[in-house]
Length: 177
Image (cartoon, rainbow, N blue to C red):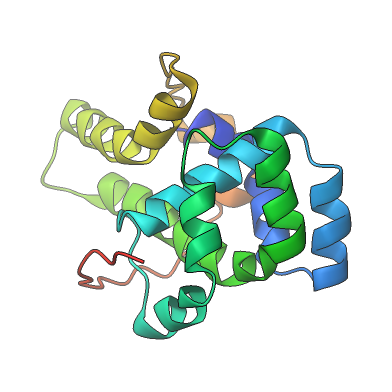
């Protein structure tokens, strides 16, 4: 099964942005395509709206950027302004992207590991989980969202499907910034 198309398409870039230096981040974002900028803004929106669990330490680090985070999560903000904010104020990306990536990975993995569900029920639950992440994309683009569901054999070369996940159950309250 596949994560949201845009998130999957940009998974390597998002992981890079969560780990790179400020100089690398600025250079990378100055030349990023519109789809990547939109994907980053979707991640921001999901964190701002409390759809992604954020620890108190992460929330504290992000709070100094709340004006910029709120602006980036506003779907009315144009791409040139979004890019400008991300390039000039993108220091929050390393903090913001880690819980987004981790949350998506954990939700997808926990759905697939459930032994109490039939395959059909797993597919439906997986789809429901994806919709939580896709909701912002749908609002921003106004376009229907397609889901690609594949077997695990389709992802053999995909490093994001490695079994290196640590599954933790964290009970977080949604956090508003």
